[in-house]
Amino acid sequence: IFVNPLQFGQGEDFERYPRTLEADCAQLEPVGTDIVFCPDVREMYPEPQTFSVVPPLADELCGAFRPGHFAGVCTVVLKLFEMVRPRIAIFGKKDYQQLHLLKGMTRQFNLGIDIVEAETQRAADGLALSSRNGYLSAAERAEAPRLYRLLNDRATRLRAGDRDYARIGASAVEELTRHGWRVDYVSVRSQATLLPPSPEEKHLVILAAARLGATRLIDNIEVDLS
Image (tube, rainbow, N blue to C red):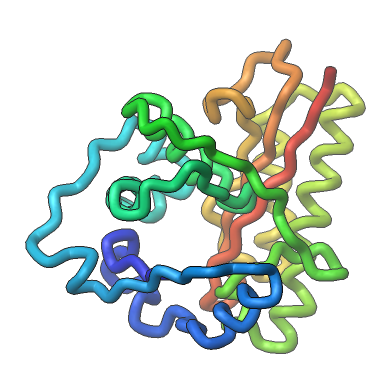
């Protein structure tokens, strides 16, 4: 458990990001966790840190709005892999671009670690669970599930045969903006590459990132057309 300063950009919420070590450990104990590794910054970065090299995809989607974020993510995960030497590592699908980049890093560097994809956990109203949800006011929390509802609606359009990917994304941005969101992107991509898909692509993912008040929320939904 480590809040990684390398992946927070200037002006982001590193200082106020939720740090809930006792609550985290309380959740881990009943499921049989034996050891929790929770280093401090000096242990992780005892000297100025060289960053991992990341592919161009790291500068798209969330990377376009958070410069350097994925270089910080890949750097800390590579260090943790070397320190812990796990057989498997579990990453959530909510951070879909992160998952894609870390799978690629693990494969390309022949790390011999199995990356397990964990399904997104959601509240009863569909909102993807996140530490940052705690920033939302009561009114914002009531509005927040709109993001997932909108993704489901666009997935339905894809399943019905709509292949105008640009329009699907643009109309979603317009709808969120009308309800007070500040949208970074809503984009239809290929699951395999996270690049813009061809009209024949059968395995798609719709990804979105938008701010509600001061809180940046991300979500996605996979769409299988096969």
